[in-house]
Image (cartoon, rainbow, N blue to C red; front, side):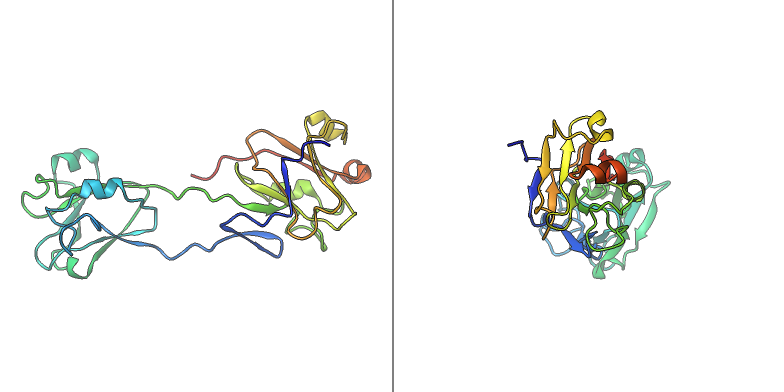
Length: 261
């Protein structure tokens, strides 16, 4: 019995992905988050104040592009300035700084949209920046969420997307597959199989002798047959039917792209 560890038959899709009509969909992006600057580390209800350790808060808080930073402070007790450069921020040099929250904005929460990169803020009240009422917030993209991709969708002309009628070269051209994604093969029982072969030569000649993993004749029904995570190295998939592979080109070579950053 050959090793089938690269395939996991009849497995439910990983958490965080949904199958819809055989196509890949990820959970809908939520509405933007509103993040109170200094929340959970300040002594008072208005966390943007000289007593809050804003550096500690920033170090433990993940902020993504599109989130909103909310500055809370009592009316007419503070302002917030944003600095364009780290050097200005560190020296509390307001010459190029922009006031993003006026002194009456904080009572209801002054909102600033997070943008990728490091954002530099400080109090606009005299001497408070020098007393460390300032914060540098790193804004990074969310980590990539891996997907389960049904091979052949949405270009399959009928029911089962793993079949000799699908142009898999065309499908590959329109499908981005990233490192960590998994492929799902769906086909009618006893109508096909899927093999992973080790070399390009095996792939182009539809040779199965040295296959390293496979989906059998019934693995394609139900949730389908899942591959292991795609890597940066090419993985060669071929139909278990020689005529499908050779005459109909029912095969694909997959190299994972670097995940979006």
